[in-house]
Image (cartoon, rainbow, N blue to C red; front, side):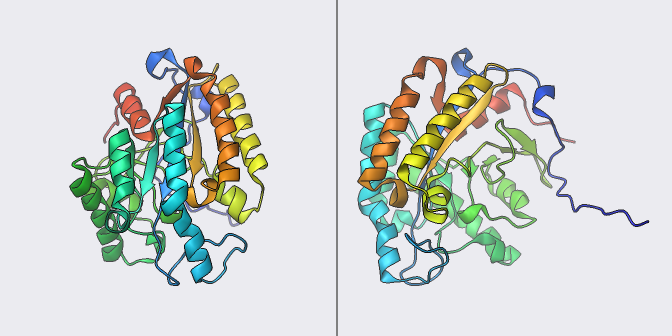
Length: 298
């Protein structure tokens, strides 16, 4: 009899949620809340890029302009809303934006928001590149953020959350200390690389405006309901377990005013529980967790 053997990554071990140690976030809170925004730049009528109406549509001037709306208009609506709410955010930031839209980076710096490495452009994905090219992509993104902001980025989210078998090793060697690409948990967890551990921090691919409203073609009201239901249930579950709640945004999706109105209502609901939650960024989550549970190296 031949037994089927599953291919395994060997990056982390199985750990059921109830078996883990208890801890709290700062302020003795049990639920961390993060707004994770994606700011992206694309090549005109070339490479990859999503479409407002059709999955897999060819690149055109129309869908290029639709995505460019996010950087020209939607992102600025979103900044203003976050200012009104008094909420920090992290931004998964394509490094070529420093050349094309530096004013966005300047507003982030003025707000004190977090820059998360997000490749050079979302017109490409790293899992199709040979090793040397993937390493170059990661190092270029890291160097560009460091040079412009004066601070090296700690976190990484690959364009399209794409990875090769070597990505985690390359990220750790480049200087990144945490990743958002592995949506396997509602708590951080350590992952093995060939040099030193790297931390996986929760990042929702469910409560995420792009798959919800672009790929599944659900409306803003559905996304609003998802944001609120996810929050309410996680707030309840956090009585038993410390958890991380994330809302994932793209300004060319959520930045259209009728969708922004739905986000405003959801964030208002979340803010009403401000005394019960830690509103923060993935980088702060990573730092706090690493202080409580330092990585163990072999």
